[in-house]
Image (cartoon, rainbow, N blue to C red; front, top):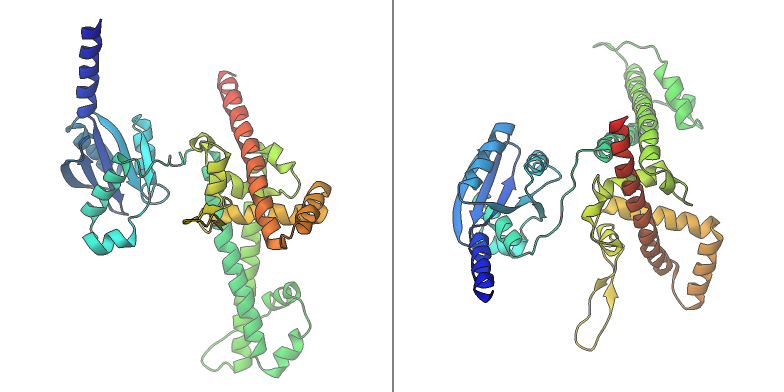
Length: 371
């Protein structure tokens, strides 16, 4: 019996010795991959085009060294998104690797091969262990729509600021015309202006022409935002109806929560991981006899903002939160400190709801496919 166990142990050890750990430094046009054995020996470095054909070549190249245990990929949310989805279809475990720190770059320099090897070593040493988002479901659609909406809002704000600036420096006749009007009234009036500009145009005509163009641009962007909102609302409602029922949670806040978690919320081990993802978990800053925690300024800042919105709304209109805030105020905490505590509690509550919603969708998915 002992001989059998010993032989089995040797077989398992030899099998693990053959496993290959890889790292990939992703870019827009090319991906650079590095392969390591289980002892950290560099087996090879190669560059592949960032295409579907290149991804298959990269997979075959890694397979030539032995069974692939895991692959660490930089930038799974950007240039490495396609590579991440490809390896998921090939049933290969992918680990998200952060960018190399500046101290390492100053010491070793920077190149694609160095970054790829660093990604592989971070994976092999278990310094990188984050599971990337799957980016293959409706949450990814919400992320793309919210990204377009955010850029449209920025452009609309820029157009509005420029309209006010042009009016402020316009000739008196135009300043008098738009004085005291709201932005919507200015846009409606300026968009209807009729003017033609040529080499003989006066300053007043040119300003009228510019105001008309900016107003029409503002109106177009406003309509674009409205169209996106009509698409996002039912998507969020279908994915997280229980989350929308919570106090202080609207479509914008719920969308930010969903995007932060991704299509695979099970990649987060527990609610503490979710709080850290949102930047709502205090960071230990103890040293010697001093034991303290500091504010976490990392994580997904959009998700952190969503937690702040929920906490702020509940402090104004939720009786339970008001009672808690009053209690902590008597203990000597400031308003900002109370908001930070509330964000941590809300993160725990939201995580449970998101996990429950994801489990419900998984149960309903086979039934829909069968029907």
